[in-house]
Every structure is written in C-alpha cells, then in structure tokens.
Length: 228
Image (cartoon, rainbow, N blue to C red):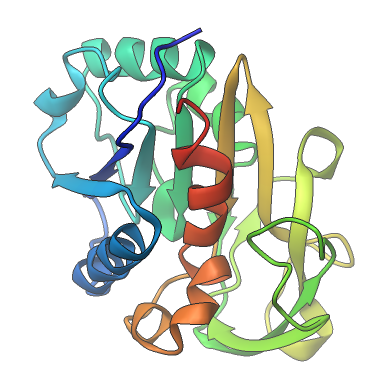
C-alpha cells in the first residue's frame, strides 16, 4: 500500500500528439477551482518525462483530453506500478484517445474509443444517484457534447454512473447500452472516467455540472483521497 497523503496533490497531464482540444486550458482552470474548494493542490504538465520517475508524490493522476502516444516506456511502467499499489486515476474526455498500442491502458480505462458523431445536444441518463460524481444530478440531464462511442460497453467490468440516451441525438453507434461515466478498480487503485468535456463550455458553465463533465467531484471523493 502506498503512503498516505495528508496534503493531496493531483497531477494533470495534457500532452497531445494527435488532436488537441481548445478546451484544455479551461479544463485545467476548472480542476484548479475544485482543488482550491476541496483541499488538493493541482500540478500540470505536458512533459512525458514527468512520468519517468515514480508518481508516489501524487494522490491522483488525471489525463485531461490527451491524445496519441503520450508516454515513454518508462512512463508506462511507472504509471502502471503507481495504479497497482493504490494510485488514483482520472480520465477526462479524450483520455480514451491515447496509448492504443498499450493493452494495460485499455484495461485501466475500461473501454476503447472508436468514433463520435457531430457535437450536438443530447441526454445523459444518470444511473447511479449514490456516487459523489452524479448524486446531485437529475435522472435525465440535457447536455451538449460529442457522445463518444466505444468498441464495446464496459458495463460488465465497471460501475456505471451515467450513460447516453442515443434516441436524443443523431449518429450514436452503441445502442441501448452506452455508458459514458464510470469508475472501476485496477489492482489496489481506483479509476474514474468521463467521456464528456469536449468544449470549453463544459468547464466554464455552472460549476456544479463539473461533477460529471470533468469528473472532479468523483475525483475528490474517489481519487484524491484514495491514498490519504
């Protein structure tokens, strides 16, 4: 078991080697806002060498809309070791669009990205009203995003918090079982993932909505505290 963190620190990683989201700075600002509100310090980096050393100083690592290959072999090894002994991991939006050739990462996140339809309004079905990430939301939440499709539903291996109502938008490809927000355990670590968060508006609107959009209430409750 990794050491506890009396003053939790969260590392937000934003490197992109493929598509780069204009919303990344707003996502960072939102996480900093929530860090100040909930007592964790936020560090940000785009440097893959940040993962070439053990990640023990951090209570959680967040991949915020990264893309493409973003880790060195040493970085992969350190991230996996960190998670297995109790580290927290948060994946936001394009966190599903990275490290395709690293099987461990696909298992860690819980599902692999395939495609998305046009950015458009739709409805999120909130299934889990007990988890801190979604307990404040209505059963049906109207939102505008890209509504990511995954290779397969991860439902059998994750705890689903919210899913897409494909009847509410055009171009969905997963049918009636389309999770978008979930958590799972990997080794002794905890993982929180949200596929939402494409546009800046996702991080600059009502801060309460960030519980799902940025996954940060879930991060605070389920990740930042996991090692302290």
